[in-house]
Image 1 (cartoon, rainbow, N blue to C red):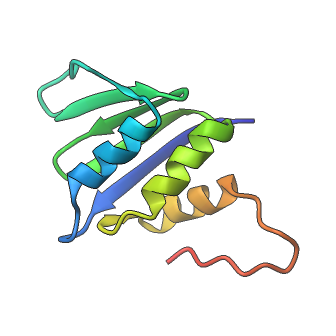
Image 2 (cartoon, rainbow, N blue to C red):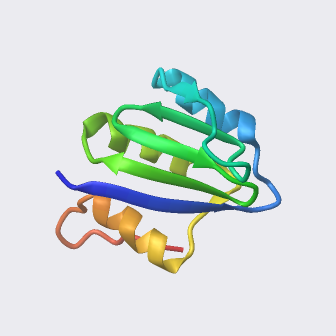
Length: 104
């Protein structure tokens, strides 16, 4: 298992309350932001999630629970990856032979 370093951007449909529901489900806890650009910082399942004005940064260790949390976040309408982060995300979820995975 390796490390995770992903950045989500926000579209006009972004709803922060949906992200917070996922974090609650995984029993993540909030900490004080370390700089004025951070809106909030949340830790749990060996991940740190940092909310900035226009992005959500996720860093930590890859394990079963952290991958489940990322998968749930990926279902939220309004969170989007650029091409590089989409590729990193797809690589975290090993696909079956001959499976088609879309990074868009």
